[in-house]
Length: 327
Image 1 (cartoon, rainbow, N blue to C red):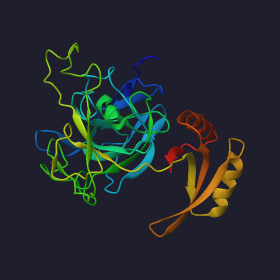
Image 2: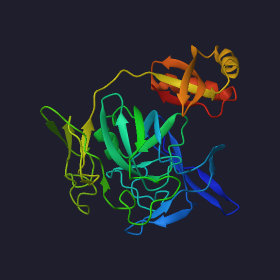
Image 3: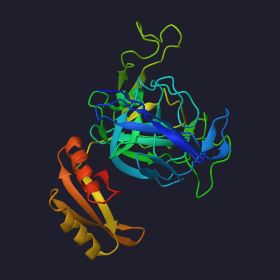
Image 4: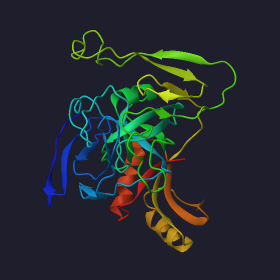
């Protein structure tokens, strides 16, 4: 694995980016745009930032508020190479905290990340920008990847959902001090649960603070292990480091590359024919807010690596907005 640091020069003084490798098996490269728009200040002095459009490696990203954000895709994680460095919203990155990098969601925003491969899910706080690798939708910390159970494999099929109360209401940013902003606890509605509840201890990953032999052990307070509660809901304020890891039933999923979505079937059919040399292509109908869309998807694909290759081929045909989805 190679670590690299790229530098994006400031353009017209509005956008500066510090580029570096999000050292993972996926070879991801991320960039932190440092010029953002502050719309409110949360308790504790943490700014609420949406951000201006920014460009990384020729791709434009458009930060925006999205109270209904709910997407599937591939998660990666970043750790030692960024530990102690500044995040996109000015905080210090700690690989042992439950934060995350996202390309467009405001900072901070709380999201629930569910590993669709094992059913584990946790709430994390977005405070950074990334990942900037095609096909990745969120970059977890080392701790987050450990709790979700994909620290060894490097990537996982995930669902990312904004937490109610942890993001903007309508089109307006949350006022300072609102639960879900800054360091205020968030309220998660209780979920009904029947039957026995089983728990297991999840120790901190090797090298984390407070562990014997860790370089940070002498200076950082010990981190208590998280508890994974199987079949139980969550209620009340959540300390992100002490929250329960929700366990949900695992359903079979498939990976696709979505090349485009059209309201006209003929347009979807033409793109489908053009992409047929890449692999099996499907035109899938979906109704969104009363409008029929025809989604052109390549797949199903057997693995993340295969999806990465197919995505690169689709983008090479000119479909720059193509992305990996999990259904």
